[in-house]
Length: 168
Length: 138
Image (cartoon, rainbow over all chains, first blue to last red; front, side, top):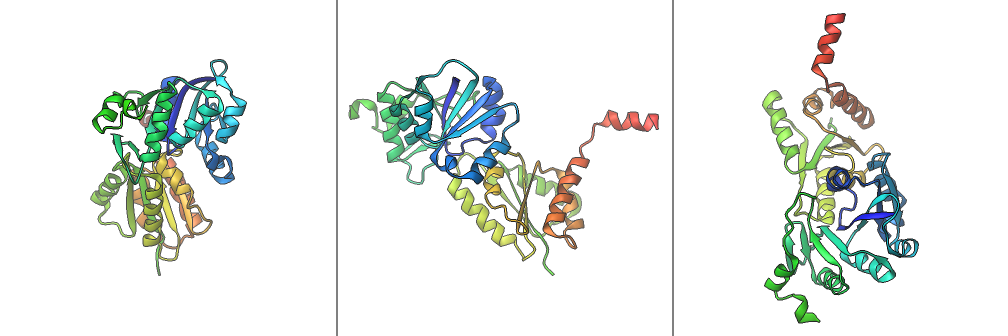
């Protein structure tokens, strides 16, 4: 597959994906890499039902994503890859599924330590996972929908004293 | 005798405004609540909120959940509450549906009610020139 977007979204497939990202990217497929959905037939069915017929949906565990799509993916159907949290994206990256850019769409945390945007609230663990991804050379993009003006993550991190330089 | 409970859950305040618009036309509506889904709420919190709302409007006849967009978060979360005879979900809520609710809420089972509301909502989407042409031809 030709990966046109890798995104972290607690909501996985929902309105912003189907109505904004899919048409914007002219995506032909969506991969939901989520251990919870991959092991829950009901949730998988609901997700499959929600997606228009012409869009191919693959549901798999994070480990299977890395195993079945090793390296950077640039050939085949234009695809969006969705993770439920930053930790899953990090595991996939460490497992060998390579991407240069990661979009953070909706991350909600009860115990938020860094509020990046109203829809991206990182708790300690999510922050650590994002920092690990940054260190691995992944660029982070903070947009809910394609037309958002993404704020600069580094300056947000610097403001709260969670910048990379402190942790390297 | 209790009536079927109705929960409207939508992106943003669409549902509140739909209910307001319906009440403007038809007068106050009973047994209907709205839950808005915005970017500041987490999925788990929304699940709790919707679960609580279902209990609140359920008078023993079951609850119909009306959502705006199939595949959207309000709909996705609502689907996790689906239960034959207890909870039904109809997507694509529109004003004609809401206006019709009070007229048909009693005397139908939840399933009949949900089916009726769905069909009614679809039936009330019209292309004006199509109607005009039919009238002119007919």
